[in-house]
Amino acid sequence: MVNGGVREREELNEMKWKLLGTALRLRAEHAPYGAWHQEGWQMRHHDLVIIGTGSGNTIVDDSFADLDVAIVEERKFGGTCANYGCIPSKMLAYTADVADTVDDAGRFNIDANLRAVHWAALRDRVFDRTDGIERAGRAGRVESDFITVYAGHAIFTGPGQLRIEVADGEVEITADQIVVAAGGRPVVPPVIAESGLPYETSDTVMRIDEPPRHLTVLGGGYIAAERWRTSSRRRVLLSP
Image 1 (cartoon, helix red, strand yellow):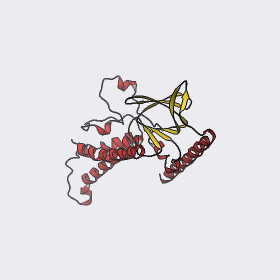
Image 2 (tube, rainbow, N blue to C red):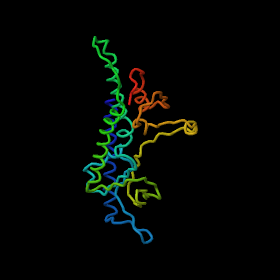
Image 3 (spheres, rainbow, N blue to C red):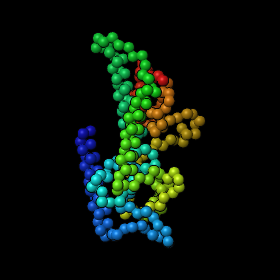
Image 4 (cartoon, rainbow, N blue to C red):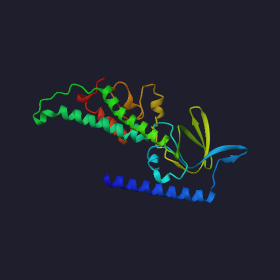
C-alpha cells in the first residue's frame, strides 16, 4: 500500500511536469494568445483544461501560475474518493469496527453493551467533514488568480474544443491541452433497473436517511466491500 502510494505520487508529479513543459512550449510557439476566433465570434482560450477534480485536481499547483488554466467539474470537487467512495466509506467502516469492539468487550473482561449506532448522526458527521473539504477545495480554485472554474458538463466539439453545459446556458472554450480525469460512475445493470425494485448506487447509498434492514451488494470493488462492512453483522445493525 505504501509503495503503491509512492508510485502514484511519482506518476502524478511526472504528469504534472510534462503538462507544464508542453504548455510553456506551446505558449512560446503561439504567443500572444488572446481569444480564439472563428467566423466572426470568439471562444475563451486556455493553455490547459482539466476535466474532473479528483486526481486531476492534484496536478495543478503554483508552478502553473504563469498559465491560463481551467477546471471543469459537474459534481463535487474532490472526485469519487472524497465524496462518494473511499473516504466516506472508510469512515463508516471504521465506525463499524468501533461498534464491533464495544460489542466484543466481554472478551477483554469489560462489561459493555452496544445499544445502537445512530445512523443519521453518523452519516451527518461523515459528510459534514467531507462536504467541508469539498467546499474548501472549490473555493481555493475559484479564488485562484490563474484558474477558471466551470461548474458543468464538458462535451468535445472538435480538436481542442469544448462545449460546457452550465447552469445558465453553454460556454464554448478551446485549449492547447485537455486532460480528461473524469473518474468513473456506477452502472446499473438493466436487470436491476427494470425490476421495479428500489435500489441505491455507491453514489447515493451512504447518504440515505434510514439504514436498510436488508442489503444485497452487487459488485466487489472497495466501495462495495466497505459499505458491506458497515452493515455486515446483525448485532451492529444501524438504527435511525
